[in-house]
Image (cartoon, rainbow, N blue to C red; front, side, top):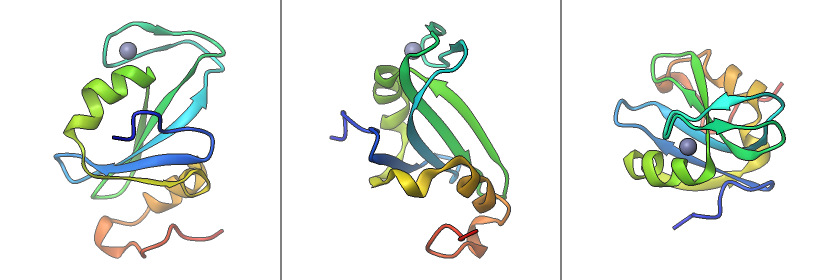
Length: 112
Ligand SMILES: [Zn+2]
């Protein structure tokens, strides 16, 4: 459905089975990562997907996925998947968002 996303302008936001937010953000590697979907490597300079979790009870976590693995493995597990402007999904914004539990977040990410 959103197979081409995330790209430079749009990210994706979905909800995990645990009720956490999962923000899928396009990224270019600056070091090597292991994809949790296939355990294969993501090389320096590779365009891939950062999955930034904002936990229901507060806090954040993130993983680096191959674009295709994210769509084949992760995305099918997410609910209410929707595209969002990439600017809403900056890491510092999401970390701020993680400082409050889900029930106490405004509809918008807090401004800094
Ligand atoms: Zn992979």
